[in-house]
Length: 328
Image (cartoon, rainbow, N blue to C red; front, side, top):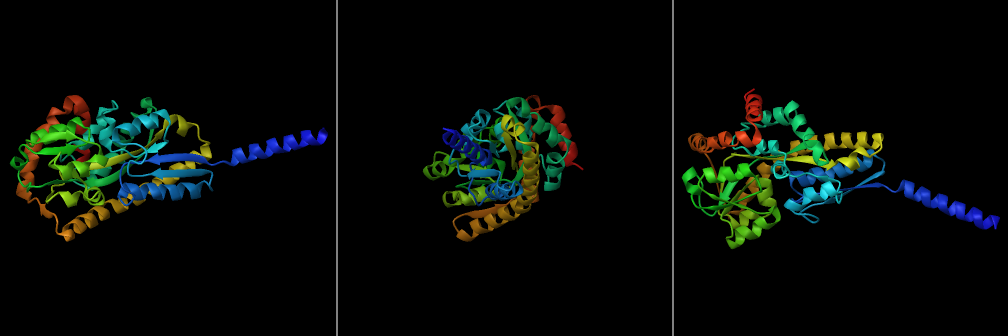
């Protein structure tokens, strides 16, 4: 009887030990391809996090909407079905944090320097803090650069957009942007865009070149205009309850891994967009046109009213503060 009891105790101890050593799993879901800047950075974070925690954390990366599409992923994070996301900043508007829609305002960032003044400064920190009441902790801003416009007709002047069905992600600002150009905005999940372009459900779209190329959108778009009219960035976020419940040493190691992954991501974002644009050009399927200074000025003039019309939604003070940082 004593032997049986001893064996039961030993078995329980071994089971507890195995359980105690089971790694903490972080499911990291995103909607783009693995070879995009975001996709590569997610993989880099996985490597860094697992190494920094000596295997105590396991990061499972799910790219290309394998788990959740655009509209589903934030709810999944809040419910704890996944622990980490890197959604585009436009997605926080529908969640009720409309201030993030400032990043969608056309031509608000004249350069990457201006952008980083905002994301890495007090404005960026205060914006991430606004996610906490939603059960979300913001860890970092990731960059995917400035957007180009594409369609099956040349887009050189604002008047060229008249009547076109242009795909956008869900954003009141992007809706206003397309309407200011005379286009009809159509909200579609990122995973559905290629087929919509192929079948003519929409006529065109906007994207950084790396997204366009990795999703093969150039195969069904005859013209690309390098307009740099808007910015596409992401916020890397985690479920707040999960994050707060981590052992302090694990959280510190993951914070460091995220900082290093962010540095890596920023370094490759512009390079990958430049390479993607070159690759699109080499296919010969798509004509690439870069706006002249005069043409870009016409686009700016057509789109400036969007900033003014969104002051009540985003906040006049926030827009002014961003413009002030961007002017430095």
